[in-house]
Amino acid sequence: MTPNIHELTDIMTVRLSGLLLHDTKFFARSIESEPLLDVAADAKTSVSDITTAGQHDVHVDTPLGTFRSSYMPWQWLGPNRPTLIYHHGSGEQPFDFGRFGSNSFRRLFVQTGEDVPANIIAVRAPFHDGSSMEYARAMGDLENFVGMLAASVGLIEALTVRTTEQTTGPVVAAGISLGGWAVNLHRATFDTADRYVPIFAGASVAEVFTSSAYRWLTAESARCQPERLREVLDFEDAFTTIDANDCTPLLARYDRIIEFDRHRSSYEGMPLSITNTGHVTGALATKTLREHISNALTGGPADG
Image (tube, rainbow, N blue to C red):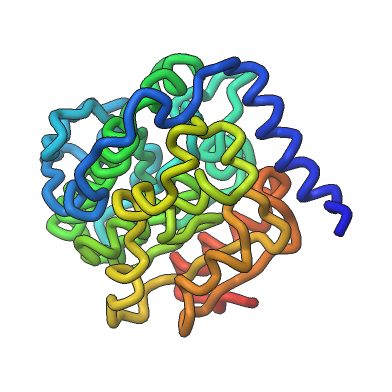
């Protein structure tokens, strides 16, 4: 079947990234790591100030070492409001608010000029404070990828705990792509937020690197060991056994990176919403994404 414009956009974006990054591939140096689920469950950090604007750097301790992460309270309306903890996508620089900055947090919450009736805290994952090439080089080791996601989970947990202590409103953890994996992983390990909003993500992370268009950015030495990647990265069993009605996912029907037919099984029995876009075109559909997150914040319907 001939790919449509949404699928072609995903394919061409990945191909172009491969050309720009040359021989820098995911997991080219090593695929050794402890399982992601175990590392995330032991990730620990603490936060003190969730109301003061500006970047707050933290160090997250994990079984794989210490990783540097950051968070930024963007909007604080008060302790009786909902609080949104938002995690960006892979390779984004979420605190870049300059004229030429391009990231999902800026598009969703900074550029629009529309008010969101919630406290908003942005999370920045490790390795996302430098260039795209620096990020790609770090991802040459599977341990860095696992540690990065686990550190994000540890920070989300610390923010959730602190917010719960200081507010009476619900805590909502949302993220797109890499951020969606992080919030799903937080649900599988801690499940302390009131609601989870994963966008264009699932719980079978290895499939992204072994069967989706993203495999072109993955080292052949890693692709030829798909079972090893699944052993380390997948957490679908832990995710689906959580018995709580607290997840409102959004998938893209024509996504060639988080492939719809593969990842929708993670959300069986949940109010799954679907957008008729791809991964890239969906990430640019600001109105659709904002409405989906807003419904989770207000307890509104999640339309399929």
